[in-house]
Length: 57
Image (cartoon, rainbow, N blue to C red; front, side, top):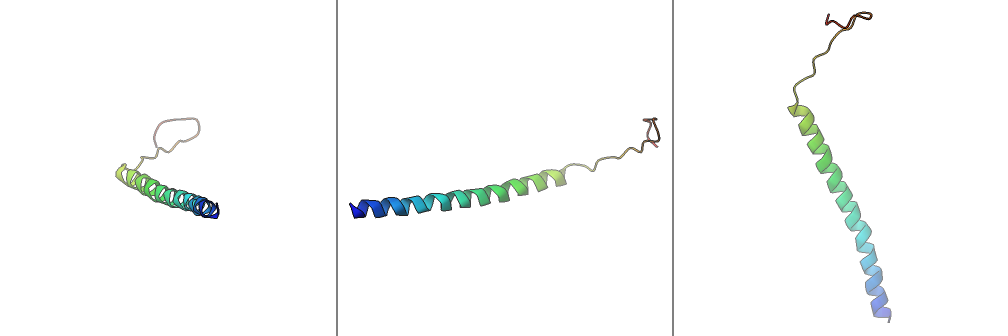
């Protein structure tokens, strides 16, 4: 009976470690994709607004 308990205890310790590794990998991949998407977009053109006039300056 003690052998099966030790196997179950050891198995429970692997799950949080796997979740931590998956979370770190997800963060790295997601951050990299956001940065690459932002770098691939052209720069936004700004429009200066004077008073209530919505014409570009």
